[in-house]
Image 1 (cartoon, rainbow, N blue to C red):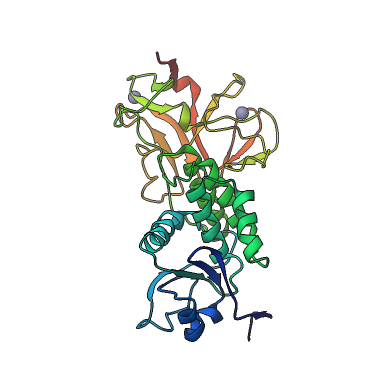
Image 2: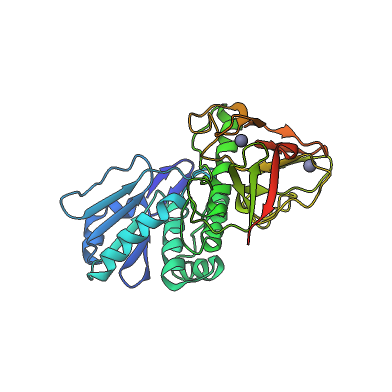
Length: 314
Ligand SMILES: [Zn+2]
Ligand SMILES: [Zn+2]
C-alpha cells in the first residue's frame, strides 16, 4: 500500500467485463499480477504516471487530472476505440488512474455506455457491481450524462457539445482571465447544407448570420444566467433549439460564430460586424453583458434585433 494525498491507494484491480480491468496506480506496477491476469495493454488516465513496464505491455496514456473542471469527455472517443481494438483481438486491458476510482472509472463507464447503449446510471451500476469503490468526480458525472445526451458522439457539430465547450471556456475565463478553447458555430453562409428552420439575416445586405441552433433563449427579467448544457440546471437558459419568444428583449444572444471577428483569435471582447457589408450588429464579451430586459448573460454574444431579420425557412 502507498500513501498519497492523504488516503491509501490499494493494490487492486477488478475485472469489470471480460478482459477489461479497472485498477489503481499500484496495480499498474505489479507485473506478476498483471501477467497472471494475462493483461496485454494498459490505458493510463492520469498525469505523471509514466509506464512502469513498457517492455511487457502496450501502453496508451491520457494526461488528465482528477478535477471536475477537466474536459474528460473529449477523450472518450479515442479511449473507446483503443479499448474496443484491444478486446476485439482477444487482448486484455487494465485501465488505471491513481486510486482507480474517478478517472479510470469514468473512461470505463463511457466505454460500456457506448458499447451497450446504456444510460449513465445503468453503466455506473454495472461497474460498481465489480468495483464498489468507484467514484467519478461530479464534473465527470456531468460529462458522462452529456455523453449520453450526445448519443455517444462527441462532436463540435452538436449544439449541446458546443454549449459545453462554451461554458467550459467561460469558467476558464473567470478563473484565469483568458480564453482557452472556442467552439464556434458553423457559418450558415458557408455551410449551406445545414438543415435550417429559421434564419437570421443582416437587415442591410441579407447575409445569413445564424440559425436556430445558434440562438440561446432566456427568460426576460433580472438576475444572471450563464451558458449551460446541463438539463438539471434550471437557470433559465433554454435548449439549443429554442427561439426567442420574448419580444421585449432588444437583442438576440447567440453562441460564438465562425464569422465573428476576434473569436478565433481569442479576443475577450469585440464588436460584432456583418462580414459582408460591415454593418455593426452588436458586440460580444466573455465577461457577459446585460440584455434590455435586465438579465445579465455570460458570456454574451449579442446581436441587436433591429439590425437583423428573422426569417422562417421552408
Ligand atoms: Zn432579455
Ligand atoms: Zn450585412
